[in-house]
Amino acid sequence: MNRTPTPQDVPVGDSWEDLVTTALLGTDRRTPSGSAPGREAPVALLDAAAVQTVRRRAGLRPARAATRPEPAAEDPRPPLPPAAASRLSMLLADRSGWAASGRRGAAPDLTELLPQWLALANARGFAPPTDVLPALLDAARGRTDLRPAALAFAGPRALWLGRLNTDWRFALRAAPGGGASLPGPEEPERIRELWQEGLFAERVALLSAIRAQEPATARELLATTWATERAEDRLMFLDSLRTGLEATDEPFLEQALSDRSRNVRATAAELLSTLPGSALAARMGARSGSCVAVDRTRPVPTLLVEAPHQCDADMERDGVVPKAPAGRGERSWWLGQLVEAAPLGEWPRRLGGRTPEEIVALPVADDWQPELHAAWCRAAVRQRDADWSRALLGAPSAPEAGGPGAVSLAERAKLLATLGSTERADWVARFIATHGLSEAFQLLGVCAVPWSEPLGRAVVDALNIARDAGSYPWSFSGVMGLAERCLDPAEAGRFDGLTAVPDEPEGASPGAGGYWAEAFQRLTTTLRLRATMSTELTPPPSS
Image (cartoon, rainbow, N blue to C red):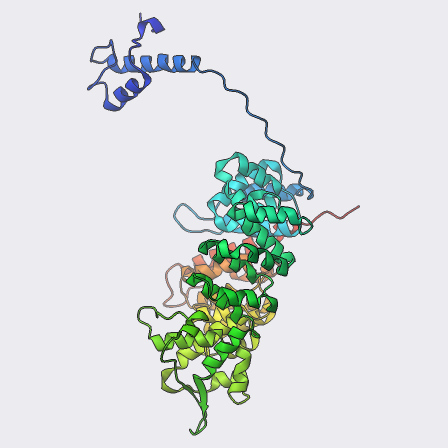
């Protein structure tokens, strides 16, 4: 009869480290002390490990009890309605609409709806149920795009949990000053102490917070330690002045043009160029104005360009980078930087009182048009000048390669961002009506959500045209994904007729009709789910 071994039966000569080594080498090459090689050696090794485990645990002295953490701060926001709480748990379960075959299927992709759900919950001021916070923070840990909205929704408990679990430390890094409370304007002594003695993250958060409320006070605080800051810190602090940038910042920024760091000088020059009345903007305007003129001797007035022949010390101090990138001519590189930093409002006066549209329409001699117009595009984006953006965008029916000034669709997207949301959506809708969806993805990305009715109709009409042409929907998967997230949910009923499998035209891709029906069914289901989510997040009527 087999007998269960007792501790007295088990060899104890081997330490835990010896037993681990024996297990790694194998009992064929090494056996525990007091055990012979053979079939019983593995059993002897396991018995010895079990006894050593008991001894190690029995000999462990109990540690002093840790201090109980302070409770999390109270969250004053109202709790989620029960239906919305259930919906959040479902979204965090990470169920996807993708089938095992890789085909998306007709089910909504819940992971893509989570950002919209968080945005709605934050807009309506709800607090999360405590039991979902671990799953929410885990989701935000894996998706950086979720973090701002997820941390705003999680509220003060996210910081509390971040201090207890290293996996959620990103919550502390994302919070101003690592979650510590920042002094207010009424606490000048605490402000001075934190600014002089705080960690870098705390100082950045403090400067940004003060800048948002009292720009001049933040600038004066920065000036007190500017000369002793490290170059990389000066760059970060200087970047915070973008918030509330005003004419009174000019003397400080002019001083920064002489900084030892090239990156600091470049940032100071960029900020000054966004102030049309600054001395730097005037200097750059004069330099660029001397490079561009109207030739009235030709049958058609034409812009003549004479790019700079050198980059002198004054230009370099004003932010012009002297060394051109590989494959780029030095003179065109310098010209582009001068024009980009020059005030756009000066060009009509310098070029005969012409409007931006008339200036952009002028021919440019000697193949300088791409460089000149590209620099004007960058200036319009930097200075947020809607008139110049409209001129450079041109009509939506212009060739797909770009408008009269935009060198690419990426440039057009940046120019569109300077326009109001309604005008932006109308322009993109007309662009899609002319060119279809193949080039519209970047442009749709800058349109406000939910899309306006004309833009939504243009997108769906273009998708329907692509379906009737017999192409596969995979070529439009990016646009279809945007439509699921950005179309107005109230429009869902308009697409019911598109969910049927159409007759395949001659020459169509095999099975394309079924795939399109599935894609439109997923679209309508997603829109209805978004409408339901909004209803679930509607606060109950007050008593």
